[in-house]
Image (cartoon, rainbow, N blue to C red; front, side, top):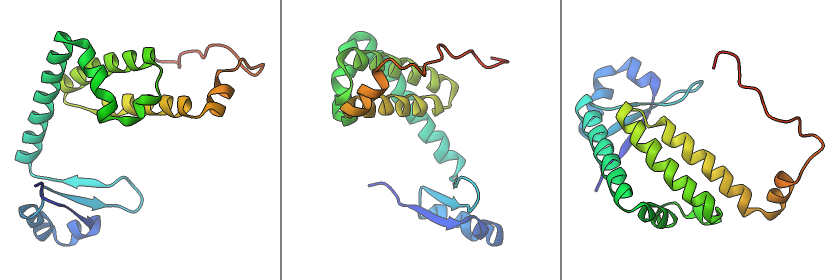
Length: 155
């Protein structure tokens, strides 16, 4: 059973730093709620390192399994991410391949933001396929189509 995630206002950390940090003896992390910005999470460096190690190991293991049996990840995704059932077979194949490659690269960098972005993008694609009216509108040719979008300057 995992330890609970406590949540406190950010101002509590500022007013009572020792007491707020002591909450980590009862929780794996403390969520610091902020009014005008994204919340922060306070956790011990040892726990953060341990969780990072688990993510890294799990990702490398998944990539190794996927290289031995590429169909295994694709066949497992609907159990783990039920929304992938709305993707056409060729999209599911592409998503599985991109997921493994992105997860492996992200773990090597120690930053999983790219994996989260990839999942968000594919979930939105699945949402479009799940709604026949929306899919029809977005897939239909449009006179408002201005062609390919130029790459932003500096990229």
